[in-house]
Image 1 (cartoon, rainbow, N blue to C red):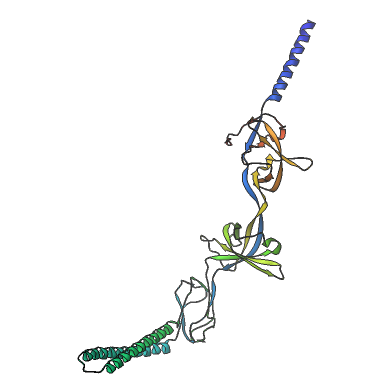
Image 2: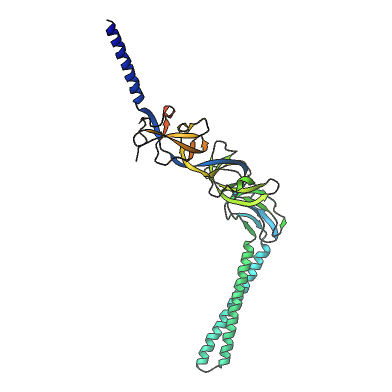
Length: 360
């Protein structure tokens, strides 16, 4: 009886030892992921004002009396629309005089041409001298020159008459009206202000210590204050390397892509500029994949070709909500353990339980 008791105890102990040993030898289930080639980015948020890419203070093209102003502040106009007309009475008379002078010159040229043709025929019969023929040909050349001059004067008078109308140089909205019918205006006087609503640009002042980090290739997002729920794309079109001596800042001009929304010049907006850190190029992995050591070091577990875990020390770059960028210690083909790494030791056998990552 006593012998059977001790035998049962021995068998029970052996079974426990066997089960414990098997548990230790069982593969640890893990999830893995391949690193993603990435580079760290830092954002710089700056506020500025939206301005029109084109804004013009329009002036009359000739001196004269304003006959009528066809627009007012707030009017939307298209390129070529007539905005203002001046009294064309004198210019109209000058054009009529020029047309009459052209007709007279044309008649003289026609007569001179007829005389040349007649002289050539008579000279063939030896009825006139060669000197007379040469004289008539000379008069014809002079009449042709006079006709060309008259036509040029007529074109000038016609252009002068057209300049009594002020057309819109581009499409936009009239933002200011500075004259009325009955006023005398001179060339250079500002009579209307025209602002193009599309496209618009955002001007921001960048601190001097960050200006060198921004290029025309930097990615930009625009957050209009008038449309807080919208995020628009932008492109840096100009970096003005002239500092504001008081603010110690530089101007950056951003063209806003706002085809589907109306942004008004003069409103405010914020620009989010993504600055790429050249020193932090590497591979992005999930934050849970990186183990922190008491001495401040970092490491990850890599699954090798024998499905065993290998600890590898890594150098960490920047961290964000998207993950951690590893600048040293990883390659693009590594399988990084992202789940189950807390209990792993070097050379532990693992079992990959996510099938979305395959070895090449």
